[in-house]
Length: 337
Ligand SMILES: C=CC1=C(C)c2cc3[nH]c(cc4nc(cc5[nH]c(cc1n2)c(C)c5CCC(=O)O)C(CCC(=O)O)=C4C)c(C)c3C=C
Ligand SMILES: [Fe+2]
Ligand SMILES: [Fe+2]
Image 1 (cartoon, protein in one colour):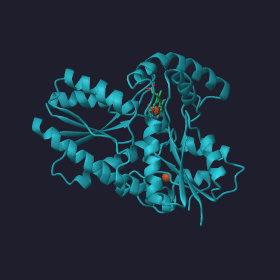
Image 2: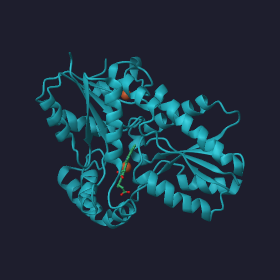
Image 3: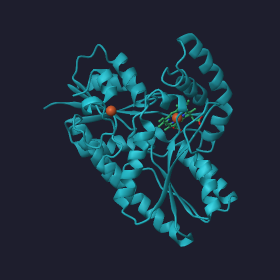
Image 4: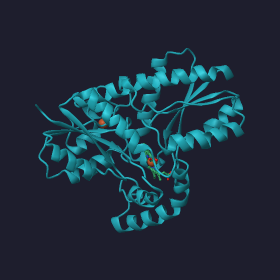
């Protein structure tokens, strides 16, 4: 029997209010987030995490003092393990807080894995998320001679699309009592400079949204894509979720807000979408504000992840096709097949 360790990459979140600042330090000290030389980056990360600390602590205080992201990811890991069977074990590797990738590596080695699949919980590829986790894993696991395969992205993986479409359909049914709804697919934003350097993330977000709209098959569906969670003074990709709420208010339509790049509940769904934007929508007099849940451990989503793990080399649901249909980021990693 081949023992396959599935390494689930995610961002992680603080597990106490004291952990907020060190978590933010780790995030801003990542070369994928701030591309300055190491000493300058450390100083900047120290400065920004101290400055952002109070605002971020306030956000996590509203969630009982910690992020639910790890617990939610653990539920996904358990569901995926059940879907895959006894030859597989799933280990969580968070980028900026516990359980870190080093912990996942130690556990996978102790289990005696003889094959590894790296699976990001980011359906859409970004250099700031998936590539950052890949690079860290490669550094940590460089001395471990075990065959390792990567899933780079799955923006229109059928199980993901089916799960989101079912949840959106329910959301539209609720909102229809207040008029013809507009579906707003809301994704985490990205600085424009990152996209200008070739990051495919917004293209992948569009791929997910289009696939969901096609699957819904609702005639004349009113829908759009927007970006939330901006931090700092840089120019970010748009339109922002706030701008789209203003437009919905002008048009007098109810909104169905769909987290499209987050696969589990955390601060940006539970605070930003459920409290801040809901309040903004009420202030703007939007007829109804329905927030669709993240896919979490929806069985179709988990079945889709299981298919990706069983056959990481398949092109199923893949968003990136460079020269010859190959993923340029996996080519860079020396892993395109
Ligand atoms: C320049 C800063 C940031 C970039 C670029 C960025 C990209 C990015 N992030 C996610 C997913 C998540 N981000 C989360 C929190 C978070 N992100 C940033 C900054 C950038 N993210 C900060 C400062 C924070 C902390 C919270 C805050 O201060 O507002 C989280 C949530 C963590 C949790 O609550 O558990 C997720 C998830 C993606 C998908 C992405 C690029 C595509
Ligand atoms: Fe983020
Ligand atoms: Fe790719």
